[in-house]
Length: 160
Image (cartoon, rainbow, N blue to C red; front, side):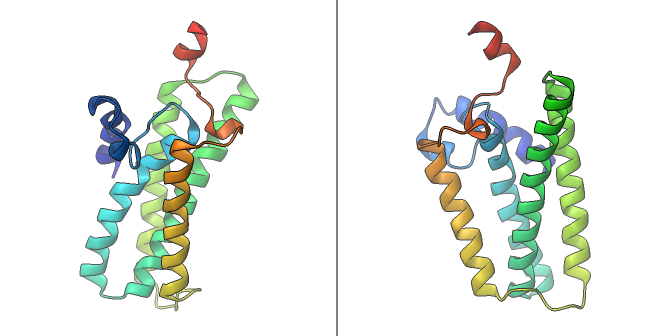
């Protein structure tokens, strides 16, 4: 997930700005766009997890929790460190992505091994995941005027 997500940071640029690639790659340097780096690797992992576990409700619930956790982690981490220290650093950003993936995988492993029943059924989990993917698609092309959707890149900001 770390390697695939890291490569997805560049695929939009490598594609020459292809709109289809923008749906699952970072199309700008916003926190929101960087959250999409989890989507495709997580979808692939979900297929692998389903093949191993054969419990669709558990896999969908796990993917939902993992996605919300990882996106929440990098978002909270980014705004906490930039707000507290007043600077941005690409090494810290990359590190937070790696930590989010590692912690997210630990959460997923625990959930998949757990004998407890998922908190919501497979239909609610699937509906929530579809809604999240839909939001990523819509906000890629029509981002609201909120800080999470604005460009956060010190090199770009220095040029402005």
